[in-house]
Figure 1: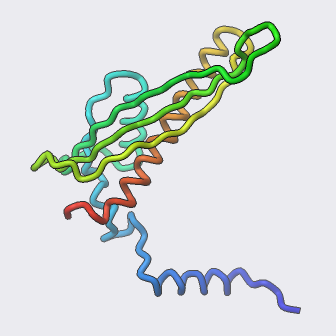
Figure 2: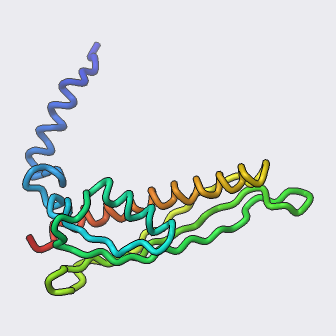
Figure 3: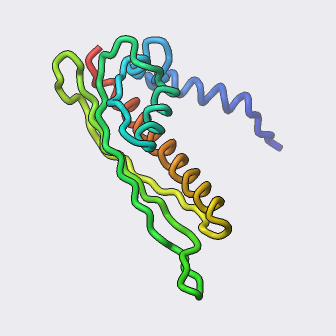
Length: 163
């Protein structure tokens, strides 16, 4: 009987990725290290923008000094998705999108741009306070998700950025 050995599997997987030229994006010398502490975001104008900037700086650090600038536009739309027999909305979807453009600070040339979209939901049942707390939590989760998506895309495209 052949027993599965995880160590053998992990070693063979490591050997396979080493042979294909795989380099972790944030490893020393990796392409995405160009983004760390190098991206200055536009100043936030509302709560959603603030959440985006905060998460971005948590992941990639504040720009010191800024090599790249990131412009963005956040759009959130709330739609009712569950209606009770009394015609009262009991659940909402929060649909969101972020359009962004990364530019070189020296030349102002747009290096890459894109759009990320996602959604979260929340329950509108209970007290007014609990509904408002659920709504705020859903918006915070959505901004975290979309900021992480944006960073993932920028990380994947970092190999094409000027050094």
